[in-house]
Amino acid sequence: MSDAVATEKEMLLTDAELLGFIAQGYHLIEPELPAGLTEAICEQTDALESNPGNEILARVPMLQQVYDHPQVRGALVSLLGEDLQMDGHRHLHVNVPGSRSQGWHQDGTNVRHHQTWCVLAMYFPHDVPADLGPTIIMPGTHFRNTPTDQLATYANLKGQVPLTVKAGTVAITHYDLWHAATRNKTTRERYMLKFLFNRMSQPSAPSWNFDATTAEETARSYLSTMVGAKGYSSDYYKEWELRKEMWQWFKGEQVDVPPGEFRNMLS
Image 1: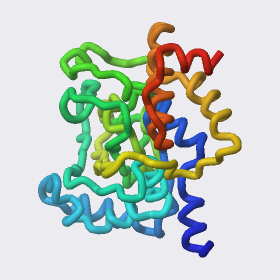
Image 2: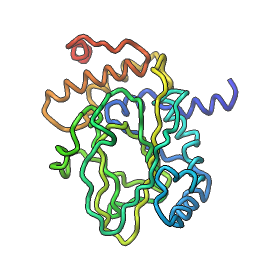
Image 3: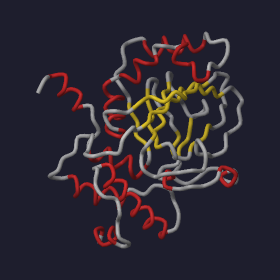
């Protein structure tokens, strides 16, 4: 095996990391980016006269280095397969000073599919402390199909995770994960550059660092004990079924799970 192939394989997710994504709906990466890259991206973003929307990559081409980084690429390949594609939709999100908290929402329309056909890759080019209006996410909610108008009544949720991250962090989330911007209490703007990546084909085999000798034992632990969205105990059983289906789907296996089979496996 060549050094290049070995290095790429090292950057793929482990079974535990892939299972963590299944249960929680997100994965954080702190890539070792070239010195000065995040500062240069911030400077180019500061210089923009208006929000370029889908043209952000053309206006700040250095961003491509972030998404081409082996650690980021390895996570994306693990989740979406080798033939993944960057979507044409991307956006610079600016949380301005004095902003109000945004309501919880899922991107796109209310047509949801729990299998991972699309992910959001949120890049933060500067440190995001708690008072700078970080993005918040709600683990496990990628299994929920809730119209945005119903989410409007929700505020702080038990178990929500603020993305108070270091400069250069990339947060990869399932497309359906609940998220929101929080209030910016500072006098500075907070940037987040959101790119979408799509799976182009059904998985036929694991595309991450799958360890056949321990994977199923790891799956029993992660899929049954990693609790995502808080709720009644019956919700956990429903989510366990969906997690098991997603695990099988990622491996390229049949996903038709007879009722109760997953509960029996967990007992």
